[in-house]
Length: 174
Image (tube, rainbow, N blue to C red; front, side):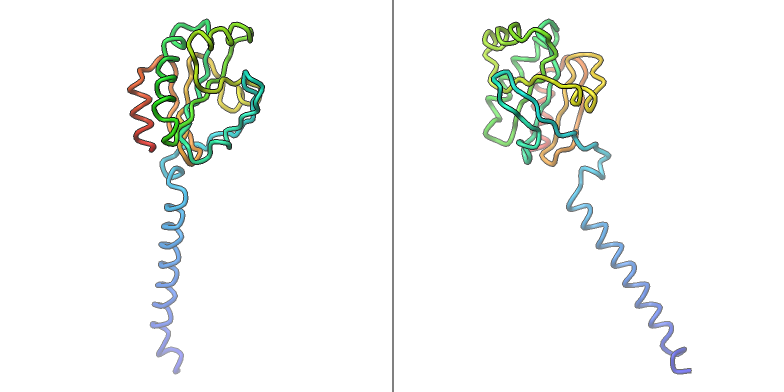
């Protein structure tokens, strides 16, 4: 009989603890992983050789905003975007930004000549099948991914975009 007297209080305490646990677990997830709540996909890590022979991984730039651009020297819209990326890299490289170009040309010499002619100031990477699968299919170029500081794909652009489009994304993610 004495237990029945305290049963409503006990049920209230149990309900309160369950509700508090649910509330706190949701708050903790939101603080740790807000990108997931935006429906963003985690960017696949890669390790690729650059034109100068250095191995570069996406994980090297953890905590930085990364633009990953798939392009080719024979592509007119790609050629138009290159000066934008050179400017953005120069302007924001010390502010938590890294520009990476993935070259889809078969002719390495043509890329090296193009890089010198345009004074490309960021790493140009030689793709492997894994990156083309993970970020693909790359049907049209340029295809550009904006990757957040936490490693999530914030946006994907297919085709030419102005420098201001990319700069606005960078400012949002800084």
